[in-house]
Image 1 (cartoon, one colour):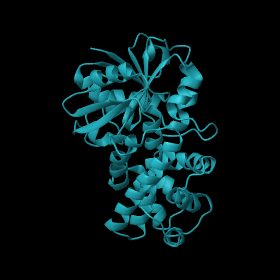
Image 2: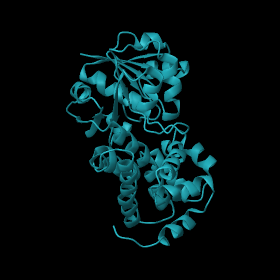
Image 3: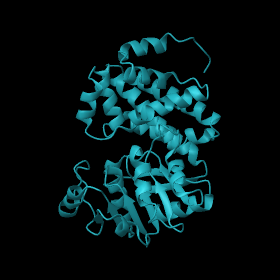
Length: 329
């Protein structure tokens, strides 16, 4: 049995806590919100995980020191925009022998850092950081429905260690040394899910969605390769696998936000209706900046950017995509 501190009591952090505790590990989940902690303790239900019963042995706390002290693993499960702040607040509590696991999917806007790079920037390069990424909707993981995921770390021994600890009968885990590729794919796929949702919201069909998924994966790969990532990563679980589930499922906030935007609803109304963090919107500025910096053509990212930031009508963005110069696949 291993011990896990999970920082963040959102859907993904809670779902992972449930899975790990059900495996026989011991888990303590931290949230800065006292009301949230009390509600989870008392009801053993998460308002955004309908039908999932939370294991009664999981601890919930607002005390960072109690949560982190003497744990084998510290898992960062806050939204990407809060990762730096969270790590900065607890870095005096984290020891080098602890393994840090990040499950947030995003790119920091000001630095263009992935989440593992943000963590290293706060803690130092000699800390061990692993990224978990793949087609893993929290709503399904919380119920014990089967899926696959990747544990990525430059140190394959550390990736394998995490893989071996969390692999079980419903979550098959693969290891990968291309952590940057896994994180870039994990952030960009949310933007592609926004695009697919917009397409659906405008009344387009499965053909358009399939085209967006395929070409979206090509865009992600194109950027990843010039950044030093492996092409294979983008055609694996953290790339095409995660795009498919995020771009097509009603569990996906990014997909659902895209649907609302495609229906003509404003960004403010969309965010209010979704009621949770939409990571694709947080990653959009960074993706546009990276595309410009590396001179990589990313027409789908640009189209979503135009809709969000320049308030272009989504149908006009589609026309612009179709009027681009023809090329070879």
